[in-house]
Image 1 (cartoon, one colour):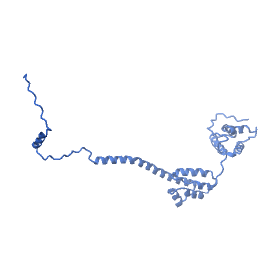
Image 2 (cartoon, rainbow, N blue to C red):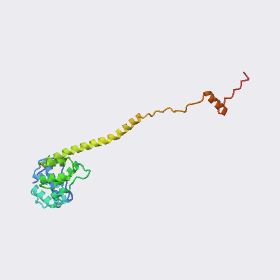
Image 3 (cartoon, helix red, strand yellow):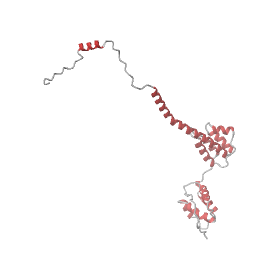
Image 4 (spheres, rainbow, N blue to C red):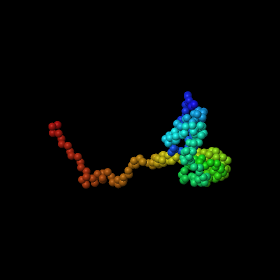
Length: 237
């Protein structure tokens, strides 16, 4: 007899299609979500089918009646059927290809490296430290690892985070300085302009070497000067 699902709020669950992702990831995500409500065996089996879409749902509906007697068996059949979607384990030597690009931040490099490490099981810490020191461009973290090797992967990440914060702090400071530079230049030009005397300066003319009387005589003889016409007397006055 099926166990009724009463007064239970099912959490948001991941969905799966035949074309999407590693089936093991889907099973793990499903179990993690159902653990929040302490789901029993019957509820796991009945709820799992609601997360399947398209061809994956078709696969479930084609399971022979009575063939699924436990959630573990159903999860095993599911992973086996969609095994072609599994992520293939990577060879540790693959990590040597992960190098810090020119201009790439330490944060970006560590994110890429960490993601790749997850796909390589049973990694040797000493091996990882050597690859990180080799893949990084010169800087604080590789020097730190050479001088004092980390004793665990977690310690390596904590130490990397410290250098990431230093790098980002310097970047912010450099960006602030770059924004202030144009303002500085503008203020400097204004100060230089103020230092110069830009007021209208009096013009200097050649000093007059003749007397005013002599100059007036020259003007009269040349005909340049014309005296105003004498006004006629008003005869009616």
